[in-house]
Figure 1 (cartoon, rainbow, N blue to C red):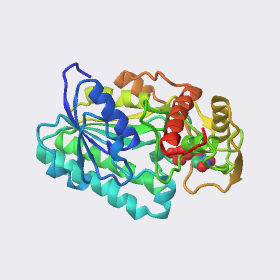
Figure 2 (cartoon, helix red, strand yellow):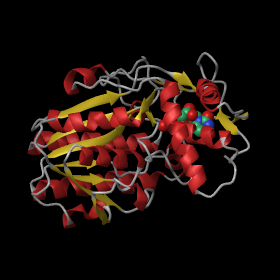
Figure 3 (spheres, rainbow, N blue to C red):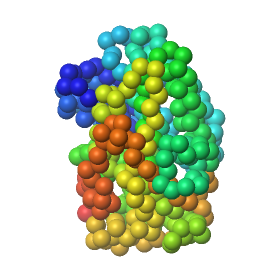
Figure 4 (cartoon, rainbow, N blue to C red):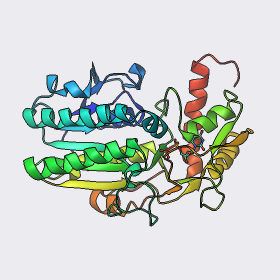
Length: 330
Ligand code: UDP
């Protein structure tokens, strides 16, 4: 990214990843406007110094104008299980919102986009680690909705010269200071493991132990949210008119659900009871990234790849959250 400062619209900047990227843009001296309808984000998640608009991506045309150098698009529903139960919600919001955003950008003359895509577009991969050339065959409507947006962006680049980078996240975790992962209801593994360590939950349900993996539980590639945020800042500089660049973002290391629980026990020094539960619909057995292209094209280099470091930062955040919610247990 060049040293000059820019003006950016961050959709979904009241959420976890969007909020951290917005904070990092501000820290780098840029001007940031967050557009978020607070359907899943939190007002406190919008970093100090950002202008905040409470509104829907579908209505982005109301606020977008030429003063913005680029849009970073995070606003989306992102829960696999919910998407299986209520697919229309995902098509309507994730796809419908992006259609309107792309049109608003074209009409306003804003021609650079960084999009929050996902490893879920690959479905059950035939080869691991997954490269961007792997076939896309999502196993759930969440992944399908993100893939549809990736296709939509590719068309916009080809037809209208948009400069776009889609970053396909593997499992984002950790925290950036006081900004951490918080969903309501929480469904993600690391926050749930840590809530169990804090005694907020009696046990962690392990969703299936009969997968074709070494210990039978699902394997994922966990990436620190700060490393992920770095890639967004680099992507702004790498975006080129008429090109849709797609980059995976992960550490290339897979950890099973049981390995995550084991590492969390070491980091927290607390017992974390687990019970085996049914498989969760739509979960692929193994998702591990090849991030070679991100290294080459973005010059990206993860700085916090160790699972214990990622969990330690998430633990600091979880304890802070626990205290702020007024709990008396430590
Ligand atoms: N998982 C689990 N118990 C939970 C939550 C998640 O066993 O309470 C598993 C889930 O089935 C998946 C992995 O942990 O294999 C990571 O799930 P998460 O929802 O954090 O991320 P995803 O891989 O769905 O993006």
